[in-house]
Length: 354
Image (cartoon, rainbow, N blue to C red; front, side):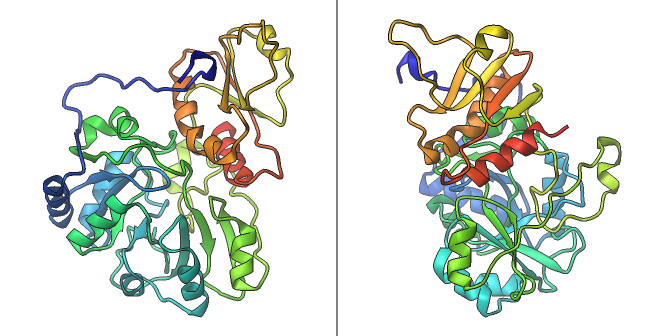
């Protein structure tokens, strides 16, 4: 990639006893499936972001996820399944759920449905519902087949930090707390799944935007989908006492770099020059005179404004800038009518929340 492209590459941190990154050979896949079947943890690639997987029906195994991530118990996990029959074993599938599954599974859609008794309370934050998804990534699907168990798998990162989209991101964040990472390459989508509350099929609600849009869901269901108000911010001192969330990724502050992030609709062209200690993350490469050099504090998600590329590079870009010792990161929202804009802007808004 050329220098003007300013690829946002994260350097892996060095530490002792980091997790082992395994290549997806048949032997390694079988070994990692045995780790999962015995109640262990494995970081796995998905089409959205990397997940930290454990046997979803084993409460002790799932407790290891919460400990490794520092995740509060009020934030539930998504249960990943390989088949519709397996989904029916953990959730009650009504006709609306089956219709959406036929249209979008396997894929980046999570459905919140009434749960079956076999799902531990820890997985659902004690609620009577469970978030279910059938992933599309072939390596994750192979692990699901080999271990023959549904797998709980939130993003494989310290709780609240930027989601990982490569095996190296996982190792940098959870390496000392984790033994096994399956390398599936960079994630194809780069933002987490769309989450739809479908407990009451007559009143579906979009909880989190993703690669599958609200309009696509409404077309299949044949009814409007409401968008609830965003969850209020929870102070760090009380996060572990907070009310149970209906699904993961709904907290007002989430996906956040440690460097302060300011979100704006449009970054004025003169701002990078006026604030050389700050980083400026444009959605699309800003116009530049042919003879002018690109300022060292200017970055972008896609040179051409391609929304799929922007989503794919979003978390990697934030991670790279977070390691750049900038005073502040100024990020530009995706244009409102752009595909994937709701998902990209949702992640940026939560990353920027105080």
